[in-house]
Amino acid sequence: MESYWSQDILALVTTLKVALVSTLILLVIGTPLAWWLAKLQSRWRVLIEALIALPLVLPPTVLGFYLLIAFSPQHLPGQWWQSVTGQQLAFSFSAIVIGSVIYSLPFVVQPLQKAFEQLDHSLLDSGATLGAGPLDRFWHIILPLCKASFITAATLGFAHTVGEFGVVLMIGGNIPGETRVLSIALFDHVEAFDYARAHLLAFSLLIGSIAVLALVYLFNFSEQKQQGLSNQSRQMP
Image (tube, rainbow, N blue to C red; front, side):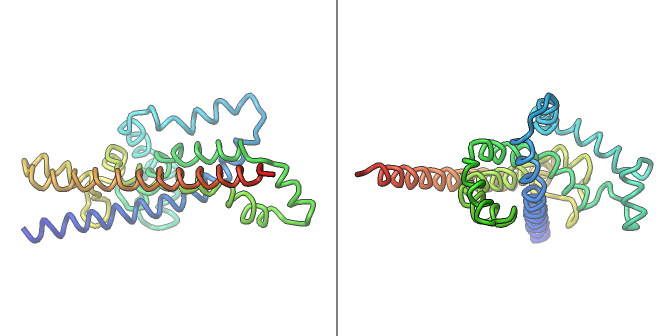
């Protein structure tokens, strides 16, 4: 019994590691990508947005299957990874991080893109006039104004990564301490007819997801309320 609990705790640790690393990478990649899409005026924009949003409608096993082929040593991405690191990419922690980033990308890019499209660019122009560089404008103008969208994007990316199953199973397998995450552990308990442990994991994931989303909605509600009060105070004579 103790070993079962230790395996579930190990799966929890692996899940949190994957989610944290993936979320950080998603923010680093998704922020400039969302900014570029928000400013892009091209007929190719629709196609690029469709490719980014593809994981929203594509079955996870389909994406996982093609990633598994790409990550194998017989194909260029897998060959390059093995030549650089000396290790196989498929069925590794790095593989499920890369898969998680691709699968959760639209959950980060889309909220940021909408925020950037609604941003008052006259404020950026004013900052540039006062001598603020691109990084200064990002940290002191864009980030404060889009703070709620950044928190929403990070939370959605993190929560979506925690709940992944098909992609992770296809490219990572079920290696304890390496690629075995909570969703796979839950599946294992169901296959073993251990419904008590399956209920415990499922209920924990359910409560955790509700808590995370409730905190995000609460934060956004508070931000909107403060913004409304601020606008009212400016309009008062």
